[in-house]
Image (cartoon, rainbow, N blue to C red; front, side):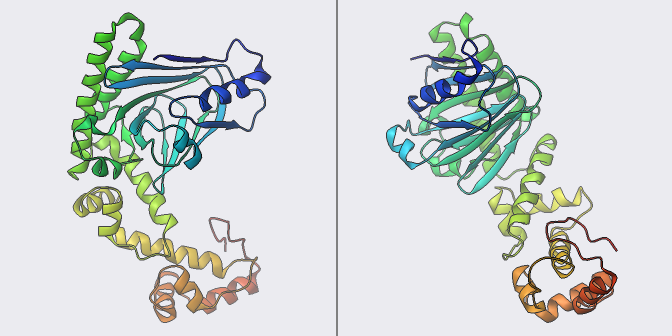
Length: 335
């Protein structure tokens, strides 16, 4: 059954409530909120296409929406499917399976309809388009658990298999009115076949296409920054992003970095910022070491002196004497 949700013909202050009501009644109900009372007009459409359904969201002006699908909404309606999001323009974000992803123009990622999700959709200065394709777990021919391991993995839709998936889905949605039901079904099967090949290449842990590397590095950097106090290893980081350790090292080598040294420098910088902090109670060197992933206080002290030429105690005292203390949230300590 096709679904059309159109708000551009409504008064601006009535669009959000109407959109919320309709989205809560979908087979996969979601809750939409916005910080704005008057939201731009939009056109949302879902079409049956054989083994899948194809969806689109077109906003006619700047938008800033949050989308949530919690346990209660999952119990209300769950198609037990994966959904592919293709961010044509604007910014689309998602947080699922403990993994946060932000998609820029012509990037895509999967999510699971059976797991709680928080997402956001932003088109700061212009109209925007988001395309979607939902399909049952078994459609890809891969075990669902292996596909779930790739939830939130950003893929560049301009190169490699990603480009083939994106181009086919864009054309299928754009020309859908010209196709018969049989042609739409054939088109969706073609997208699924390409998507199957794309996911297979990601699962194999092969070298990511060059266009995907920037997005992957962004994900890796965010992952490491959130876990600097944890035990981080190249093997663990690679496994979390479904790539080989060799690929991880190669990604960093292309930027003139070594993984371990980069993490070490980040941890030292966090300690340096706390030592110079003007707010909050002072932490002991042992506390800083435990907080930021060093073996113990002496290990931190040796590393700090090697990097900055002063011990942590000397650095803290220098900041106090020179009056150059900063707030913890600052990104640099200015001497």
